[in-house]
Amino acid sequence: MAKEVLNRWAAHSYCRTIAILLLFWRNILVVRPEDRLADDGVTSWKTPRDSYLRVAGDGEGSSFKVALFADLHFGEDAWTDWGPQQDLNSVNVMSTVLDAENPDFVVYLGDVITANNLPIHNASLYWDQAISPTRARNIPWASLFGNHDDMPFEWPIDWFSSSGIPQILCPSANSSGGDECSFKGTTRLELMRNEITHRPLSYTGFGPRDLWPSVSNYVLTLVSPNKDKKLPLMFMYFLDSGGGSYPEVISSVQSEWFRNKSQEVNPDSSVPEIVFWHIPSKAYKKVAKKVVGKQTRCVGSMFQEQVAAQEAEMGMMKRLRERPSVKAVFVGHNHGLDWCCPYEKMWLCYARHTGYGGYGNWDRGARILEISEEPFSLKSWIRMENGTLHSEVVLSM
Figure 1 (cartoon, rainbow, N blue to C red):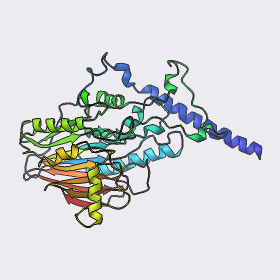
Figure 2: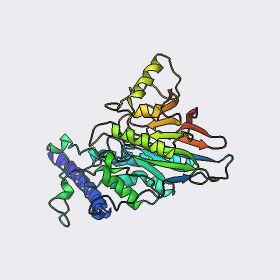
Figure 3: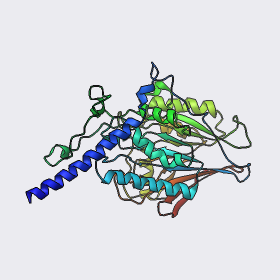
């Protein structure tokens, strides 16, 4: 009996060791972001191609479709058999949605990876895997950060038991002081720099340096095929809502940046605007309470879980309410919610949990946006992994 247990343990240890070494080998093949930093670490970074997206077609009847992928959580339990299988399942969800909807653009709405589960130095390996279905179809995309994307590694307690996971082996060559085994994780800046530098279809932007530690703050402009860049069809704002390496909040400095930027690009609020970030604001909690009291009309799954909001409100929602051009805000974070609710003169919306990583067993899918012109309209629905559609709503009030 003891011999049989020993053999099983040895086989288990061998498989785990091979899997972990494979992770390290694949990691070595990825260019580490810090390897090509300029002296100041910033000035050489590539910016999005031109921050402009153009609607295909010839005007009347043309539209622009966006797929939102939220909470993919690649790399979760990366040292087990279960974790890599969840990543494959997530790839299948994205592939199904992309093939069914054929979107013009994809937004990765945060928690692309579960960094606290990744025992490697450069998590860009898993970030690249997460965007691979979009990249393989030559679809441009943009991403922003969630609270798990740069969380520090959390040591599994069973690694320290007698039957735990074998120790990870550091590469003996080209290692500096055991750096590959430091488990320090990959910073927001490194993750984003790797995407922007090596992926020409990425429209992701860093945002102004004075907003750091918040990183993914930028605006993209959607332009009609029959108009020049001075006459946009819509502005799309992306914001980093924190979490991971710093508090879960959109700071007052970010809200001021939005105020200044929106007045610069859209001074008279004549062009519609939409906003993306990961963690819902406290306004989402207020809306959910109104639904319980039957004081508002919503579309989608409302009561699968409670709203997990940002730690504090620093003025961002006030800035949005001041702009009649803001049509909708889109967030992720809560895996069981996919609703859209009216709030003031805009809509507050969740995406749909796309990834098989992360908590919960709710069916997976993605929120789809369709932006049409002549006349302008903003419509949305949920596309599920099994191909079904639900919760269609018109968001252009």
